[in-house]
Structure formats: C-alpha cells, structure tokens
Length: 537
Ligand code: NOJ
Ligand code: CA
View 1: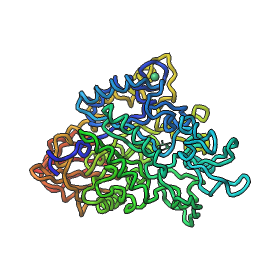
View 2: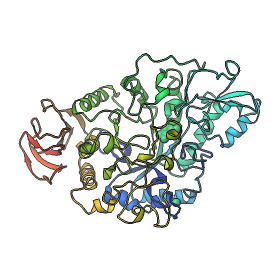
View 3: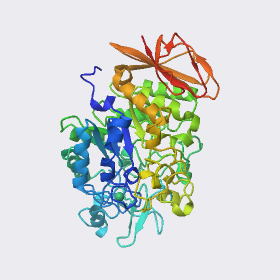
C-alpha cells in the first residue's frame, strides 16, 4: 500500500484517554472534556500521537463509569456538554488529528429511556428491545450464563415477572440485536456522532451483541488454563460458546460498516473483541466489509518473553487476511498497568515494539510515562467489578494523569479531591519532569513517534522476524519500497547480549544511553533490557 492510498488509521498512532482521569477542567476532581482540550498541545506536539480514542463521556449513572449509558446522544454534565465536545473535536481536527468515540452497543444503563419503557410492561412496544425470558422454575434463571462482573447474567424483574439478560452488571441490561428497531436506533446513534464530525468508533465488547438465539446453557470447562491476564473467577468455569460471538454478528458488522461508509472522509471502527483463538479472532476482519479491525490483545496478555512475543506476532501476522491490517495494544483501562504487569525492565523495550511493529498502535494514557499500577485502599476503591469480586478491580490503572510536580500533580486544583488517588511516584514520574529529561520514557516515546512519522517502512512496510538472534532477544525488520529498511532489536533480559543479523546502517533510536548515529555493521551489542531501532543504509 502506498502513502497515497493508505487510510489515515493505518499509519496513525492512537492514544486512549480515560476522560475521568486525564485532566480536570472545572475543579471538581474529575477529568472532563474541557480538561482534555487543554492538553492537546501535549498530545499533538509533545508526545506526537495522531488520533485519540475517548472512553465514554455520555450521561450515565456511572455504575461502570460510563459503560452504562443512559443517553447515547449527549454528554454527562460531569464531563461537560455537547458544545464542549464540538469544541474539542474542532481543535483536534485543526491539529490534523483524529478523534474516535466509544460506542457501547451491547447494553445500556437500566436508566436509559429504552430500558425504562421495556420493563414497564410485558406488552410494552419496546419490550423486545431487551432480552426478556421466563425462568426455568421458581427463582431459577432461564439458563446458566454467568455475568462477567460476578453473579448470574440474569436479573429478576418483580413487576413483570420475567428475567432480563445482563452480560455485565445488573444495571447494564443487554439490548436485543435480533430486533431490527434496535439496530436502526443504534445506527442512528452512530450517525449522530459521525454527523458531528467524529472520525469513528471503538466498539465496546463488539462480539457480545449476538448470542445463541436459543440461549442454550454453557458447557463447563474441563481445563482451566491461560485465558487472559486477569482470572475471572466463577466466569472462567464455563466455555463461552453461546453467550457471545454468534456468527450472525458478522452481518451486524457489515451493517455498521455500511453506516461508516456513508461518510467522507473515511470513518473507522475498531472492535473490542476478546477471542483467544487466533483464527477465530482473525475472522473478525471479514472480507474488508466489516469493522476495520478487531483489537489485538495477544501481546497484552502474554508474559514478557522474547520467544513468546515472536510466536504470537508471527501467528497473528499469518492469520490476518491479506487486506487486514494488524494493530497492537499493550495497556488499557481494564488491565494492570504495563510497567507492573510486564515488569519495570520491560517499559522501554515494549515502547520500541509498540511503535515499530507492523500495524496501528494504541497507547494507553500514562503508559508513555511508564506509570506503575497504583495500589488503592479498599475504602477508596471505585470499580464495581472490584467491589463485587475482590481482587479484580481496575482502579489501579485508572488513576489521574500526573502532569507536574504540584499538588495532585496538576490533574486538579490543590483544594479539590481527585476521584482516585494519584500514585506515590507522581512526584517524579510526571509529564513535565519527563519532558525535560532526555533519558525519560516520555522522551523515548517522543523519539520513536517522531521517527515513525518520518519512516514509511515503519508506518506501512512489511514485517519479518529476524532469525538467529540469541535467546531472550526479539528482532524484526520492516521494509517498504523506496524507503530505508528499519530493524528493531529488543533485549527482554537483564543480561547483555550481542545481536547478529541486523542490516548495516545506523542506530536511530535507543533506549539506553543515547546511541543515535552509532554505526551498525551486521550486529549490535545490547545492554540489559536495552532496545535499538536501526535504519539501513
Ligand atoms: C469493556 C470495557 O472495556 C469495560 O471497561 C467495561 O466495563 C465493559 N466492556 C462493559 O461495558
Ligand atoms: Ca471536572
């Protein structure tokens, strides 16, 4: 694919913002749209990302901090209003950046007008907009499906004498995507944001929206193995073959794509699709007529191992259909911070991989500072998941962004109380301190992203792993016609090593002491946890 024909989202670097935690603009201790708008210089000029994804900012009771939407077409007063959204989007576009918003189509809040109407009576016109069923007997839900956040996936409604399905919290009832009116209503929601100029969507649990039409019981698992980074407890006892990912979902994705394709310039969608089988995961690329890509979480859940990384990257590269485009995610608002999950030694090497592998990277706010997971005292915990299933809370990766060395790290005024505490490292590990330090993680990201912008090989080139490297090293080569080839080599270990098989050229970015400009003749010496990017020529 040439520069001229490549879509903007292929060569973009995305940055995920968790709106509650990025920047407070009105002094109530909670991040908001005005706050985000005030930090665009940092995102565009200091860091140098191209596109933003904002987690939900819609009116919501905040049972799941916005993933329980009470109105898809407005802004919660905590975050601002539609005028704030329009102003933010205009500023993003003025900088030549893109903005995608979160679409939560699987479930609404139980406070959404649609659900209120649906639960009002058995013959309400919107009854069928949600999944209502009789139980198997007194007190027994319709099937054995568990909710992701603990407890059964069914809630009894006393007034109408039926159960409703909720894959997540009881206050997040699942919509019935087999109902045509539901589909059309959600496509109108998409148009609402696209008409305002949004560049597309991150689609929440996209594959959950279609289930087995007969709602059959789930079989139990006979092996409890590796299913992701966080063990889901009770939920993990089942094979989730009927409660999500029904093949009919592809038809919905084609319909969603058709809505996106009504617009120019090109609009984009990425699906949050957790699927542990690489081939089944790759099926979500469709024939180029569904969502543009499913998020690839394979590295996020992997151990920090060069061999495992190579295996996963090669597997994914082989499984993606020819027209598909890879993407990489190493952190998000649901997972333990990368620096804690992989270990501190992995922070810089993982930055090099995220910014050099073939495909679109999505960087989670704060990971560019190498933030650690923050321990939150039980009494300050906010996440409903952690409150329901101790140990599974996600607050530790959602703490306020540390901007500077002042009180509350510049996230909110000194006299405000931030909605979650800042981590103990905010005094040193903050954006201002790191921007001034050429040896910081932020400076590394800046250098990587600046080089990536200049390098068609990194943005659009082919990928090949480099063979013959020592154990504990992963190295790969990116090539694109008319542009110098680029290699990246990462030492995953605490021992120094010599890496052969690299092209002759010179180092353009390094994680250790500044080695930019150092010539490379076939091999390079790497210190513990060191990584380099080498340009051929
Ligand atoms: C996935 C989101 O990433 C997560 O934060 C949320 O709690 C669930 N979907 C439910 O919407
Ligand atoms: Ca605020």
